Length: 195
Image (cartoon, rainbow, N blue to C red; front, side, top):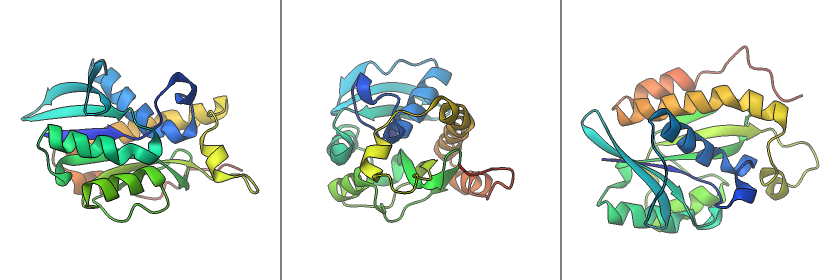
């Protein structure tokens, strides 16, 4: 059993925003796997599939970002899953747009959605995939910046990152977290920052 949870804010007005990168990855996975995230349970929109020997639940919390932990706690309880069978996908302002990072666990950093998850489930020992949405332009307020829609040129740069994040999730649920870290955590020399 795997729970793959994308963090974001529900509602059409938030759909194209930088803070919804986690939603975008889970929605991309659903499309690739021919699923619709239509079921509703555990304060989330859900889809379920068998992948290899595992059941995989894709979930989009319908709480707001800062309350994501409520949905994740409900999902773990509802599916009787342990934190180590949870993969959380979320945006990261500290990573350049187009980069991803895979981690086996650790601190939530300054991300309020991740802080909510860690506090609600009482563990930070679960894999996560971070999708870069930075850098924030100098002088901009971070809270405002992440709630703005991606610019058209940013969406183009984001496409490969969404594909890579989907692949990273597939590797994690196939039991190859070290391989995903090795493949996607390398510094990409060809990447040019947002200047």
